[in-house]
Length: 289
Ligand SMILES: C[C@](O)(CO)[C@H](O)COP(=O)(O)OP(=O)(O)OC[C@H]1O[C@@H](n2ccc(N)nc2=O)[C@H](O)[C@@H]1O
Ligand SMILES: Nc1ncnc2c1ncn2[C@@H]1O[C@H](COP(=O)(O)OP(=O)(O)OP(=O)(O)O)[C@@H](O)[C@H]1O
Image (cartoon, rainbow, N blue to C red; front, side):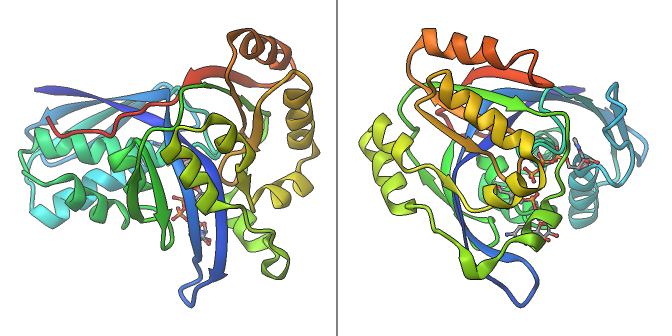
């Protein structure tokens, strides 16, 4: 038996850090949304008790370092599953990019194995398990649009943002999330207007969404990699309605209402950047079918 699951990337429309916690993580407030840029996860049932990772991408680990492997291992351990699985990962989401690619692969594996191994868990239960793998995994279990708090694992659903294009550009560098959080100066944070962002989304107000984007990790990554600032400037010059770095970076995205400007930004950034995409946001949350 085989199951195909889509694992979409996320962007952070806003990302605020409130304080550092005793456990070393940071307390965050993030508005996140899934976009139509996705890996494909193929899960094949194995009769023997093994987890096998298959991927053509040489940067994707094929052992327990892979977050999809960790998702399968966690379910096997918690529910004493004796069968195994081969996890095929067709990568489209850029790696170490601030787009939660590994986290989304893990979340898709949780949703898919719930079906393949007939575990009968709810999305809420899968999201709680996901938090054991990584802070972004719970959001990725649900997808759609949400406010994420705690260390990122407390999820409150929001309506889909107003329709627009999302143009993403990733320079030829990878960023360590832990390193960016470590370098963040907590004394000096300019907090983004999270409440206004949520109201703009609830009101379907595209201009309001654009006016209230913000990411406190941006300053840290920009100081390490000047090319990220260059991409931001290019996108602004080509007429983006809003420009922001996603997560800990280095991917920069722009929100664009008009097709012609989307094309201008997309074409302008190609050649300048390693990977460029023009996609839509995904309005819908995942369902268990
Ligand atoms: C930057 C974001 O991607 C924004 O969505 C997330 O906050 C990070 O999510 P993630 O990559 O799933 O993070 P994890 O794998 O849980 O943690 C990686 C490292 O980032 C730091 N980290 C992460 C989340 C958080 N709220 N505070 C932190 O300080 C910790 O040093 C941790 O060791
Ligand atoms: N399924 C996976 N796909 C890609 N990378 C993975 C996967 N599992 C583990 N990794 C490892 O995780 C590292 C970070 O990759 P990932 O693409 O998840 O980062 P990211 O998009 O910046 O994540 P986030 O936005 O959640 O911080 C990679 O360098 C890779 O070694």
